[in-house]
Length: 321
Image 1 (cartoon, rainbow, N blue to C red):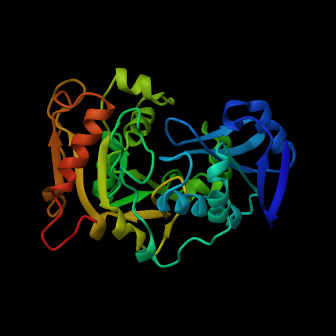
Image 2 (image 1 turned 180 degrees about the horizontal axis):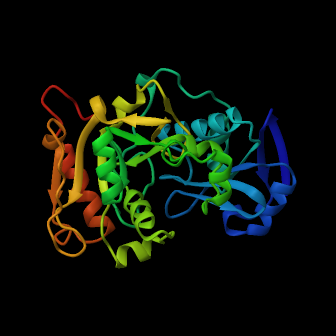
């Protein structure tokens, strides 16, 4: 294994096997002082994973293994910039010699400060949920999901809170108790996924069941969360927006529903079959879409149906970029 430092807190890792598939490699990197690792490789889907030795690892597959797209380069830049800003020493590993020069160039850039210069994730410029969406995952809308009771509280207060603000627990303690290995600063943010991504329902179901579910477990015992949709480009301009290279956007401390909320998509029925009642005042009530999840059963069908119905809420004065 070779670790070559390109700049302060940034190194390229070579001459070792795929780190995310070899925990021993991750352990060696952690012992060498690497705290965050970006693995750019031929994997089926993007995945953050906390691995051996306290190493924070994110796997980023490429649409074209020979050359990252402009959006994928932005992701690389965002990940490295965010990690270094938070004091973590970052390692970069790539499976493709052809892509390595562009990957390292992107790693050495600074994230765009002008939100209008940011590239939106799309089904063609990046890999997301290809296991569930073979044609790609639409990211023009951003999404946050919650179990029904938590969603009711969000609609009552008009705020989605970070886990730190929601629980009142210090971020360091939340990080120690977390099962994904997220760094402590992640708990300061409301994190959003792509609108068509299946992850929000997996997270919401895990919260409901009080244990982490695999995608397969969530799919086999499916009951969707309530999805809150926003236009991604509008959230880029939020004064507390942040870009970590993993989420299309996240917002520090809390995300106010108004004026950003586009739609709320919820299952029409509770798990026991009774009708879901959401007693909210206008204009919130005008943004609620109830769907029978039995007609869109499973992670793939529900995430696509929810995204498509939310997109119809874009008014003639708005543009879904």
